[in-house]
Amino acid sequence: MDVFFTIDVEVSSNGWKNLDERFVNIFNQSIHGKTPQGQFGLPYQLKVMNDHGLMSVCFIEPLFSARFGQQPLDEVVGIVCAAGHEPQLHMHTEWVDEARIPLLDGMNGKRPNLRDYSVAEQISLIGIGKRMLAQAGVPHVDAFRAGSFAFNHDTLKAVHANGIMYDSSYNTTMFGPASGVRPGETIWWPFKHAGICEHPMTVFDDGTGKLRHVQLTACSFKEIEKLLWAALEAGYASFLILSHSFELLSGRERSRSDPVVIRRFRKLCKFLEKNSDSFHLRGFHGLEPEVPMETPPMLRSPIWRTGWRVAEQVYRRIYY
Ligand SMILES: [Zn+2]
Image (cartoon, rainbow, N blue to C red; front, side, top):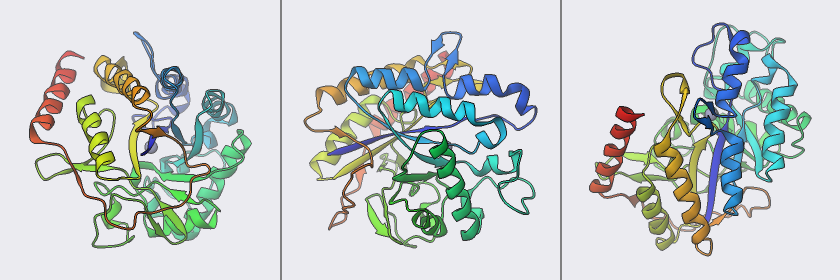
């Protein structure tokens, strides 16, 4: 089974005041994962993965550079490429109105969700993002993911218009069902739409009837392990895991390392290396745009495993 370990690589700020004074700190936290306990950001994560012979897909957010310049984006792309992982395009439109030179005509205030832009604006923004990545050393983009999974059916048209073949914005626990893409359906398997091959987030029923996506901070190691085996047994062709460049940090303002999630990440890497004959980590480059003939079964995690995760989250909140 193909496993896409996707890392959304983004400069993420709590609030928009005094951005320029805070930028160095924000960048060091969001990208380098700098904490008093050490650095647990992107370079650390890619090194641990490389030590286990694994690769990730790094969905890189470039729009922040319209405010802070080319150099920090060059640095981000450099980290990903030097580690041999796959750079792809991510986009948080929260940055559009923060640009020094306007990216769009007539922008007035913040529109954080890509789905709130017209199709022409989305085509233009995705084109800008692609060019920014190209300038930083990513000549070709195969896949796109909207920030906060906040896409709509126009996004797929805009992705296609920019010559990108894959999208990974569909998340059935978020804007997927309201996107206008295959309305009335709940989808968790790859499908073709508007000339795009969509790779939605892998989701599971957590035993309470609620669907959750598979994210490093939101699932215990045991939960992810069992879901991987269950997907393999059920004949899934692929499995998508979500993480972030700052996923291993916690606390307000992400000021501390999160030992529980760091341990979970290291365990998962060890597990994936050990079971590399069953789970093949890969990217979108060179992928055949195949979709399953039949609807794959919904993954389920028993309630006691959910209970264990909740206990672990509470432990994290109290002790870290
Ligand atoms: Zn994001």
